[in-house]
Length: 397
Image (cartoon, rainbow, N blue to C red; front, side):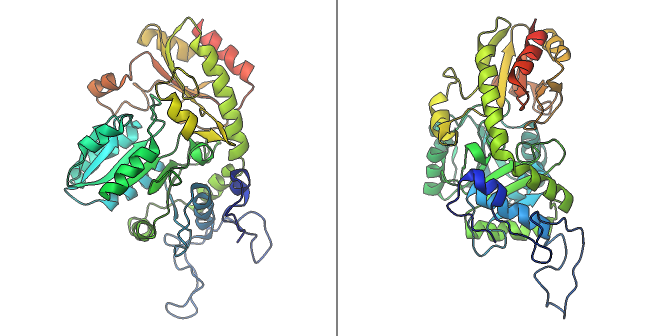
């Protein structure tokens, strides 16, 4: 295995947790499609029995993500990294850490699918209780804790209003109360933000987004640095079975190899476009962590960093002047920004959360969160920034 401890993240995205194939010397981990593995005698094998339980390609991805997010559980075969069939499959497995009657505190502004899973599925099927809290003020989290609170679920930056949460402050609350802390790190990627290094127990990703980076694979990731949680997650990953297949594991791992250089371009493009949008007469309001106008800009400067410097990420949210008609006209007039769900790919995407990604959130809750009919979410890709700006200008004109 290549020793990745102490290496810069720009190197770890390429070499973390990996080594050449011992049989052929292949520098990329082969895609292993075998569903089962031969045993020399009952129970005597080479560490692989059945592909739901063990798969070399998935292991390579899991080890890589453990290296990037700081999972160093030596007793676990992938050092605390776990790959699933989707981000929601990862989340669903993580929620199995709590029991019926337990209480979860979740960020009030969540990806619509996360809200749907928690409120419309697990509250009913698992019997858990969920409180949605604006975690931009850690005191609100403290106030929401009960004697049955077992897990704090954080999303930062949030989807779609890009709120930021002070991760060290919430990690301290979790440690003090013996509550598991989980951070959905999808919007930042490990290049900008590493929750485990900031005190969190588990980092979660939709690997479909920045990790894969090419809009051609679906997956989810959990990483932990706690041996007790790694043991539980490994058991549940196998018992529930929502594992990531070998081909998607390969595609995500291949995408990660360019994560460092892609995030540099995502951040640079988004910062320039955010600056211009803030001054555009058709834009009522904009939130972007890299702008001084962001309500938690100080946290962004401290917590989201790329190559040692503050970075705002590749996501921008704007409120247009007008309502749904103005939003539709804008979204129908852009071309380089593809009107589509998802984010984090090399291509720029744009969407209308109230109709698309957050339609499962009740209208009254959307209104409270500010997910209005004039809100549009941009995932800024790595195209030429002037071409992207001309496209947006055309849409806004």
